[in-house]
Amino acid sequence: MASRLRTSTQQLIFLGVAALLMVQLGWWINLQVRQSASLLEARINELKAGRAEAWQMDSRLMVPYYAAPETSFHRGVVEGKLPKTVPTLAQRTQAIQTAFPHVKVVESPVEWDDPQLVDLSGFLTLRREPIQALESARRLTLWRAALEGAFMAAGVLFGFFLIYRKLAEEMDLKLRQKNFIAAVTHELKTPIASLRVWMETAFDRPLSGEQRSMVRDRMDQDLERLAELVANLLEVARADAGGLELHLRRMEVAHWLREVCKAMDERLGPGSLGLRVQVPEGIWVEADPKALSMVVENLLSNAFKYAEAPRSTLVTVEENRDSVLIIVRDHGVGMPLRELSRIFQRFYRVGDEMTRSVPGTGLGLFLAKEIVARHGGDIRAASLGPGRGSSFTVRLPRPPARQSSDAMTNSGGLA
Ligand code: ADP
Image 1 (cartoon, helix red, strand yellow):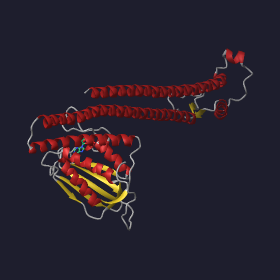
Image 2 (cartoon, rainbow, N blue to C red):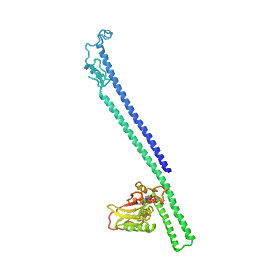
Image 3 (tube, rainbow, N blue to C red):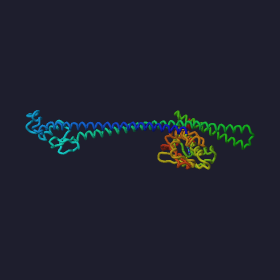
Image 4 (spheres, rainbow, N blue to C red):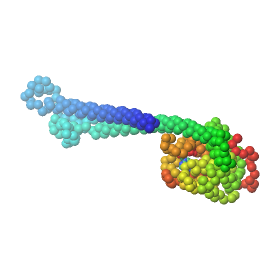
C-alpha cells in the first residue's frame, strides 16, 4: 500500500514536471511565432513607407505643372525653372523604380491602399517578391521553432521516461528484497520450529515403531526444505560472484531426466505430483547434470507448490534442428500473461506477500534462468491464465553430432 502510494506520488511529480516543461516549451514557441509575425509586419510597413515616399516624390514633381498659372507658386517660386515639357508616365515610372526598387506602377490598384499617381494614369503598388520572401522567411522561422521545440520536448520526455523507469525499477527491487527477507525468515523459521517439535516428540515421548518412522519422515521433509533453501541461496550467491561454473559433459537426456523426476517424486511424496515423463531415447545434450537437475527440480517443486491435489504434471522432451526442449506442464494455479516474464526476476513472486499462501523466496526461477543461460539456452513460461495451469520450456542448444558419447570431463555438477 505504502509503495503504491509512493509510486503514485512519484508519478504525480513526474507528470507535474513534464507538464511544466511542456507549458514552457509552448510559451517559447508562441514567443517565436509572435516575434516573427511582428518582424514581418514591421518590414511590410517599411516597404509601404517607401511606397508613400515614392508617391510624394512624384507629387512634388508633378504639382507645379497642374497648379493654375496665376498662383504665386508659378509666378514666384518656380516660374521659368520648370522644364519645357511635362514628363511622361514612362519617365516618371522609370524615376520611381530607380529610386524605390520595391515599388511598381500599375494601371489599376492591386491593394486597397495603392495610392494614385498625381495625373491619375497609374497606381503605386508593392512588388510581390519581397513580400513573398518575407512570408517564406516567416514560415521557415515557424517551422524551425516548431521542430526545435518538438525535438527538445521529445528529448526531455525521453530523459524523464528513462529516469522514471530507473526509479520504478529501483523501488520494485527494494520491495522485492523486503519480500525476500520476509520470505527467507519464514522459510527458515518454519522448518526449524517444526524440527524442534518433532525432536521433542522423538526424545521425550515413548513412541511405537510406526510413530517413530512417521516422525523421522517429517524431520526428513523439514531438513529437505532447509537444504533446498540453503542450496538455492548458495547458488545465487555464487552466480552473483561469477562463480557459477559448469562442468559440461555430453549426456543422454532420457536416463538422466527419469532419474531426476523419480527422485523428486519421492521427495515430494510418491505420486503426489501425478507425474508422467515422456522422453524419447537417444537425445543428447552437452550439460552439467547437477546444475540442470537443479533447474528441473525447481520446476517440479513449483508444479507441486502451485497446484492443488490431485495434481497432474507432464514432463516431455522434444528435439528440433538446433535445440532440445525440456517441457514441464502442470494444471495448477497458472498466472496472468503480464507475469510470465517477471517471474524470472530475482526475488519476484506473483501477488502480495501478505496474501500469498505458498511459501517461497522468488529465487528458484531466477536461478534456473541463470543456469540455463550459462548452457547457452533459455527458459520460458507460458500460461493460459489464472487457474489454467502453466508450462515451462527449457531450451538447450543441440550439441554437434558425434560418434561417441564419452564424457568431456569427469567431474559432475556444480563445484
Ligand atoms: P518461489 O516459488 O520460491 O516463490 P520461483 O522463482 O520458483 O520462487 O517462482 C517465482 C514465482 O513464479 C512464484 O512465486 C510463483 O508466483 C510463480 N510460479 C512459479 N512456478 C509456477 C507454477 N508452476 N505455477 C504458477 N505460478 C508459478
